[in-house]
Image (cartoon, rainbow, N blue to C red):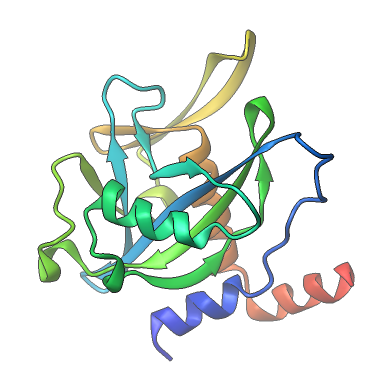
Length: 192
């Protein structure tokens, strides 16, 4: 079975947060691009050195219930990938973020930057998922978020440091992809 079909199958059971009272919480689409290189899954992150955290996935607020039109735009603008080359794989479980954000991580397949040439923006960082699975170092640092001191795990991945929502999304994706299929089915049955 192709990796695309495997990932789509794993993402079929994503969960949504309970509906927020009117006007509460901003829905944010987060684009999680995947591609295969050297026989393993990789992702692309945006590098914004003056931001905190400096590595992130393209993200933007969206109206309504469908994040996918925003995902297509973000894939084009944020990653430099022609929207016709972006394949929808599915969504991770919706999570609540700081300041009332509701994050909808939308996983997509994109061409390898080496093969395609269209998504080779200088601000993109290529990262094998195995690097997140086996970071060089994990440290706990305290960050100020919304006026509160919050301890967060910081993963050292080569010359890059990853924390915050991008790390949370990648850890959720890895957990989903690596969970044995039988355990996933048992968990889904227990939720019904």
